[in-house]
Length: 506
Ligand code: UN1
Image (cartoon, rainbow, N blue to C red; front, top):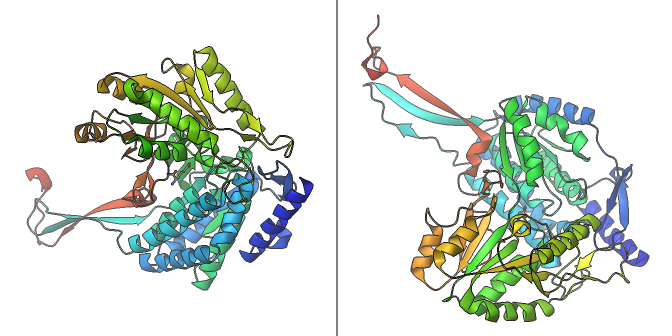
């Protein structure tokens, strides 16, 4: 296992160097582990809250220059960044694999999301559209303009160490905002590489200094991002618990926040569903990424007439999933991030059993002899007699709870009967059921899919969800607007001064 860690460290050092991270940055008091072996790879120097306040000073100063750079020129920086990310796709993929434990295709898929959002943002940089409305007064023009907002703080989670950062940053940069990013302290290496590539893109394009910053550190270091009035927007991805702390703090100073918090995503499988297609959609969404996506499918609501057949198919499919080193070809399920994650899973399985659940498959730790400090587990399926308390919680692990339903309204009620509202799916061949699921009385989530799983969203749509998921939308569609401020302008070219609403004065 020591040899495995040493080999991985070689790969990691090579990738960091290729992306332009200085060797001197790779020493300090903050240890970086890999979930692949559970061992320490190297250490880096953490920032303090004081360092972060200095970053805010610099970003705030840089804003005064950056906001005056024309949108399409800001877009050119993002274009260059996207090119560099594409050139270093496999380096960044290596880092994501090493620190998040993702299999190669998923690690590179995450990097692809960065490339895609850069493309999207470059186009958006020429489309920061405001509207012109007919004024009610003759000789007047009424219109709106979108202006840069100010410093944006981005806080991201271990499971997607780079993509959500890029969704925020590509748009914030074209919007004219400096960005200060605090990745999870568990995974900072892909962040350091991504930030180094952004620095290079900025230099290549002659952009001003101080527009982007990376914070290495724990929650303490991030505090100024929440409390400093100069941070106009805090965009945070993570647990609902974290969001409950961030939202009132930022709101208390009338800052904006964009939250992307927990999900407890379900699929409804109706009697008319293509079960083989459903099987594949469910397996990727529930067992893929070792259950550690915010979009992971955690609940299956199956019509009682097809439940036994589907669960049996799933059981057989789960038993063929190869679990192991995410760098090995053929492996589909990598490790859990750490011991606490594994213990959380075990506690949830115990709770589920005590709430009447029957384990169908999985749940066992594997490869413990080979990697005693790493946590590989068999993804679990557990049938539940009802949607009990444990099913209503988000356990960040590969557990799929299965409940059955009789009529479609009951399925919708179960579906929406949890506190979270991120992603959702229905598998059906019945068009009316699909439409109802997508309608106002259907899924209450931010994302609702038909005949595909809950995870793996494209960047072109708005990403986020309702209720305990926090209400924010990032990535595509019109998510760019949250990074800008709107100015409504009335211009009078009439030579008279008619007042609105017909009011008379002097
Ligand atoms: C996350 O888990 O925080 O839809 C993001 C997906 C990915 C993003 C997940 N595109 O699964």
